[in-house]
Image (cartoon, rainbow, N blue to C red):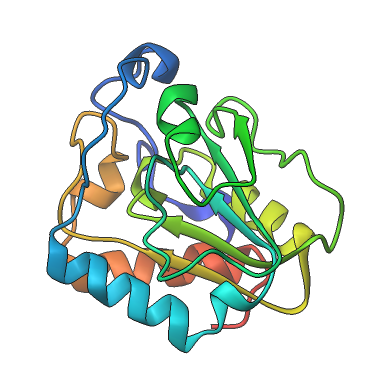
Length: 182
């Protein structure tokens, strides 16, 4: 499926208002349960994520890493208060990827790019993932995790219109369109 082959309205959202307004109040809560957090942390460890320099996209006050990455952790998200509350962050960048999907980092500057329970909010996911590919070092990993929980007014309609298997297919298509091998 080519980037422009998504059905009309797929990337529309019930709340098309400014994301900066929606994400302005800090939400210092976890958006997945303890078992899911443990599973994400274990996955990151299995993939060797903490062994390099890590970029956590659409981040918050917690990155679900079992330990601080050896090469440092850069957070990119919408709420400065949440990002600055993250105890393992080395750098924070406040940016709305739905307004500007370009990542403000040099080519091949990260060993891992993470996006935990937020891929469903991107209206330009393929562009963001192309940027993730650009900033990854050779052999680096991109790790996209998602759950059945979300802010339904901000998730894209295509995400909400399908179940878990459909969401796996959506993420696979995003990755393939961005140039990753699935």
